[in-house]
Amino acid sequence: MQIELAKTAGFCFGVKRAVEKVYEQVREHQDRKIYTYGPIIHNEEVIKDLRKQGVEVIHSEEELEKIENGVVVIRSHGVPRRIYELMEKKNITCVDATCPFVKKIHRIVAEESEKGSHIVIIGNSVHPEVEGIRGWAGERVSVLNSAEEAEHFWMEEKDRKVCIVAQTTFNYNKFKELVEILDKKGYDIIVLNTICNATKERQEEARRIAERVDAMVVIGDSRSSNTQKLFEICKNECLNTYYIQTLDDLDVNQLRSVETVGITAGASTPNIIIEEVQNYVRINF
Ligand code: F3S
Image (cartoon, rainbow, N blue to C red; front, side, top):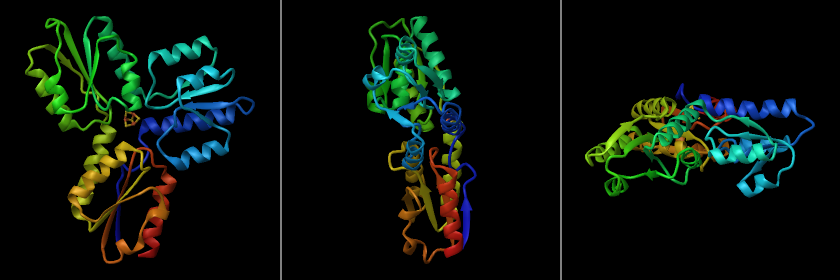
């Protein structure tokens, strides 16, 4: 059997950096409690391993309020400005692992809000990254996730500038579609395509591989939205596409009669899991 492993499978630059920062803190601060504000990545295996090393996940601002001493790592998704302010007030050591690409969006949004622009974030309003970006904008901010929502977007102050940014993992074609709808409304708009290339490259490579193989395996945590998107893209090209979290989920019967298998993985899938799957398929088929 021939295996084609996507070069872009697994951790992107921002996630790799964030996970490394947590392990670094564990090594450097043996005497202090380490927390992450939200799970550092959407991957149960990594979270379990960190828990074993004493790293605790904080789930809310209320929980953060209760911390007296310790180190809190901000994950790659970033957080609203008020979280930094809260940490400062409480003298908590903050290790900022916000992905620099997300940080850039925070800067744009803060500056444009300051200038009086209305901010439009194209993305999923309940995604932590979008919540974080929102927390850098002033009062005038909208989150749009669909063409329908873009159609309904309306602003009383016609002369106010509209600054449009995107969630880093948003689909580029959908972003373009929503921007076109907003553009027709006659507002003075500035569009900043803040979609991260890592996602696009991973999706394009997955599509290319899925087109030519007999079966495709997509590895990632079930809560990872970028893995879900990868799965949809691959399934569109190749009906025999399987979504697994770890090697245990791989149903060997599904790969019995195929000659070529493609493997890709979401941005939060550790290399070790990808290697395990790849080696297993290589040895057993
Ligand atoms: Fe950063 Fe792009 Fe990854 S924004 S966290 S490098 S997907």
